Length: 117
Image: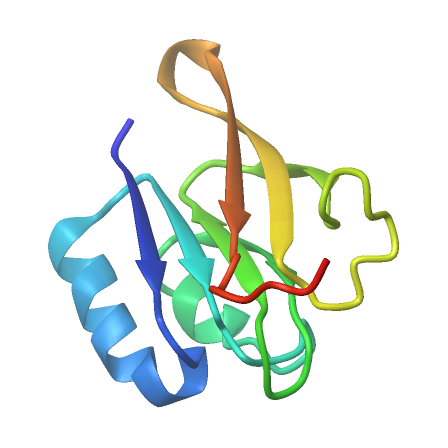
């Protein structure tokens, strides 16, 4: 299973590059940070056209994380462990069933320098 991570610093601003990269490298799972958009505004349709399922924990303008996967995604947690409120959308964790039915737990986390306590 090929897993990649990328701080995109705004999925909307980087969407053409993200789509080009996904098509060229075909990772099985991608963990995105700093998507800077809400779940509703995330470009799931465009990414889905390349064969990816999407799970998003986002917020308007700041932060936000996402998981893209060629296999189905089962979200286990969409808040920082120990901070169930997590109003800053910095963590998402999911189970991905890979080839051969093996299950892999993945997480996308965004922890900038100076993270508030």
